[in-house]
Length: 140
Image (cartoon, one colour):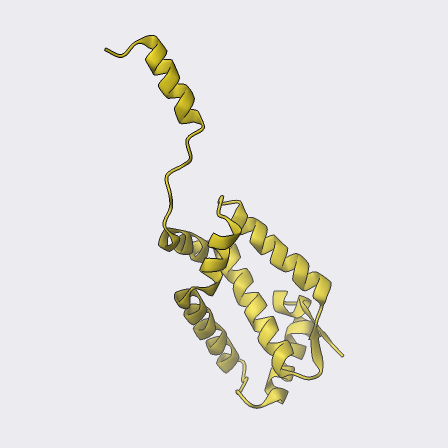
């Protein structure tokens, strides 16, 4: 027989109980499905590739850092740990999808691998258009 005291004890203990565990696959699906987070990762990847391959464009370090923290905080708002967010970021499927989307964007905008001037041209276009990626870059 369950007494009122038993019910009160069960209720009290369950309040502090941890939430059900969420698998990394579910975390990955949630973060990849968040349009703001995915768009932010795409923006960072585009800006990073431009600054890496164009010798006359560099990162706006403070803006880029602030942008990264904004994305991180959006992911943390779901309640995920730093390790879970990092696992999403470095997961093979995340990297493959992001790489494919960035490469398609570059192809659409005339960027050719091994030709730095094409990265520079896109970078200058992004900067002058004031895109999110352009806001993270500056011409030297």
